[in-house]
Image 1 (cartoon, helix red, strand yellow):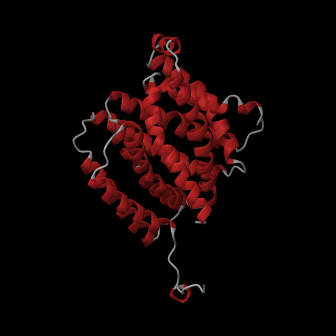
Image 2 (image 1 turned 30 degrees about the horizontal axis):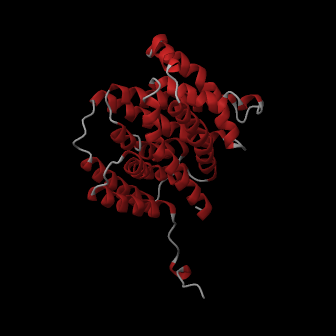
Length: 295
């Protein structure tokens, strides 16, 4: 991968790591699926009147809207609502990297290299350290099962974005968001109820508004727009492992903004994950090319 694309990928992971803190703020002000409805509504509905032409075949737009906008986020938020903790959910959701590599192999014939497999093993060892460190956190089995399903649908959307081959990934995200929002609102109305929705708007404050704006413009438009561009440019199995950085940024932002401590196990995990990402993103060079550049 080009250095600029590695930098962009890391920036997206940072935004998505902080995203879990912002989601926590948002959930203090809105029911879970309503928050997701507002996120995609603000990201998609205004801009779709500017970008009126379809950015990709309708089949892929609907597939991405279903897998990413509707299933992934509905399952994630419902899982957290059922008892899966925010920290453990952010880790469990990273199973999407594993699912993406598997789906890319079976559906796109993208065979991972030994170097990539080794990097993935190191990264998952790092995740194991984080899970061990967070082992005292209680979460419902059913809630975690929902988060695992959310990870699977995120992986499916990764491949759908690649197959869509949209020339303008941001254009694609706008259409996906616009398709997702009305369906999510119906789910919110049925699952969360009219009273909860009305109470959220009656008690609207700056924290709630700010969280929706961050989720819509930073996490959705900027984040997924860059993510889609990277998936269009590189093999899915090479891009997906960057998501393993999300728990690290989530933990550090929680430490800074929420006062949570970062343990020794978390630091060890960071070493494994960053090393794993190096093996996944930096190709090995032939011996004849391993020369020191002149000053």
